[in-house]
Length: 285
Ligand code: NAD
Ligand code: ZN
Image 1 (cartoon, rainbow, N blue to C red):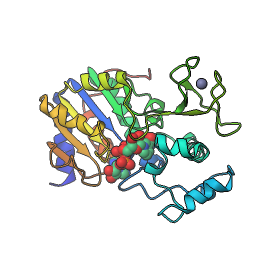
Image 2 (image 1 turned 120 degrees about the horizontal axis):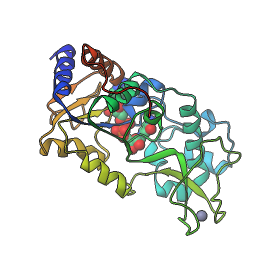
Image 3 (image 1 turned 90 degrees about the horizontal axis):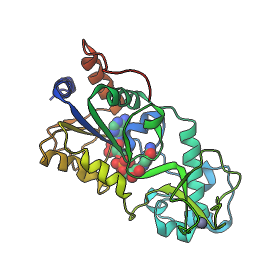
Image 4 (image 1 turned 45 degrees about the vertical axis):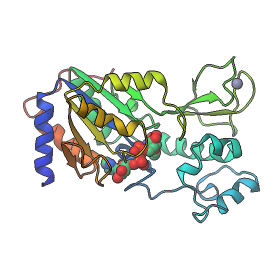
């Protein structure tokens, strides 16, 4: 099926929809220059000595050199409680690099169209696995953050005196940052591989699966439980679609798989939707 037909089918489904839920992954931020972990857009693995202005003891660098990836580290080697316990400096160096990259990035057309949709439909929920905050910066309403935020910190030992997470958007004076309450290590306020999704986010996401249209955008559909959301929406009767230039485990199960970059497909669908149907409300929240 030509992409054009797919765009028309998605626009037609959305024209009839009152309740729309979109599940996004790293692919929506690829056009903003934020590398994905897998698939197209994942060409920018990180290595401590090359990408960072921070300098860390030889042990950290030796760890990276010892990796099977020629000194380049895979996210699975960094975004875990085990990696943080082994070498918090190295993990923080990676997060500082990602924060710096995202701080200089801008929301792209995919974020902007989804922000417009959050005002177009009577009920709209955006569930994101992304931690970059670009959906919020684009003005999207009703964002459910499944995996936390790069812009929040938490106490690594969850001490009694600290809140569950606190905002920290400024660059760090020194790494690793400390918990202001107990003076111990602070950690990024994100959900690492093997950790639980925050219960409130899970409950809000699952409630949003009772919808007319559910679309997965830019996710490899391999990280659970996020990967199961679109299938569950289908079981509950939603019409489902996927937007991803590459096939994923979800592609065969959705009603429509659009093999296009998100920023292009969403822009094209938005053009069709806007013909004679301007957004219901306007202005940022
Ligand atoms: P992923 O890296 O596993 O997969 C990214 C997917 O995006 C791939 O399937 C790829 O084909 C697709 N893609 C690449 N360019 C695209 C484009 N222009 N349009 C549409 N799709 C495109 O990412 P994931 O599925 O989100 O899951 C991995 C975990 O990675 C998540 O937990 C997330 O928190 C984390 N992550 C977040 C960011 C971010 O916040 N920007 C970046 C990298 C990884
Ligand atoms: Zn503490």
